[in-house]
Amino acid sequence: MVPSKAPRHFLTLDDVTRDELSHIIQRAIELKKIQRAGNSPELFKNKVLGMIFEKSSTRTRVSFESGMAQMGGHAIFLSTKDSQLGRGEPVEDAARCIASMVDMVMIRTFEHKTVERFAEYSRVPVINGLSDDHHPCQLLADIQTFVEHRGSLAGKTVAWVGDGNNMCQSYMQAAALCDFQLRIATPKGFEPWDHMLEKCKDRVIIANSPQDAVTGADLIVTDTWASMGQEDEKKQREKIFYGYQVNSELMSHANRDALFMHCLPAYRGKEVSAELMDAPDAVVWEEAENRLHAQKALMEFLFNQ
Ligand code: CP
Ligand code: NVA
Image 1: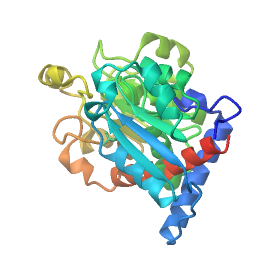
Image 2: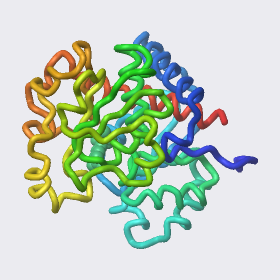
Image 3: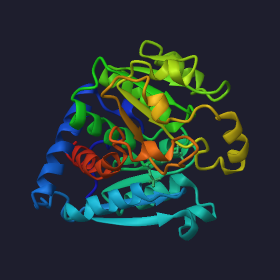
């Protein structure tokens, strides 16, 4: 069926209001409880999600695919290797064709512009499953995890230690929507984009050091030092980021009940110590599981627009 109005997309966190975000998070918590109770409402019956992956994935693929299946729908996995996208078909053409056959699209790609171009030509909602600039679905899971453990993020302090990458930039947008202060500790030259820093300057500061960033913080977050597409810089980045590892010693400067999150995959001994991954303040496994629940809530929200 051809939708009569323009679809609602989720390309960055700025695509939802504070109230909508709060609704999605509450619904994610509810859907998790429903699933834990052994129920699976078939709210996506006969719905199909197209999933386009131009980069690797474990959690994003499994959570979207399982989420659709558990809610009575279906997901199609498309990679650039085995679709015409990898052979140079323009994204605008692919968007028009794929969107005419499915009810929603999730895309993981390199340039954020690709997600925007796809959405412009898609007549069904498009979800950004990670671009070089943003990873909004992961933030839904992170926010859900914090809320479940500690309640609202409003008035809290979050420390980002490491690369000023896609995850960091989504945290910057989350700061305004969830009303927290974000302190970013990153080596010189690895800060988030200037235009993002300018836009978020009310809530975001660049700290002088990892210790400055985490002192008194309620949540400490890090991510790989070399994101997908930066494999050639890995060795050089390991040298530059030395000193930015999140470990129990660094966590000891944070508030006593501070949590540690990492979107995963984690590189133990690099951006995070092996011991911290298994420490009680690390909630990384729940954070990963919450991708499933948060994205179900997101898809339901977008289907209902
Ligand atoms: N956190 C996350 O997006 O994981 P994947 O790359 O495995 O999907
Ligand atoms: N910043 C990482 C996140 C992986 C989920 C990357 O883009 O590779």
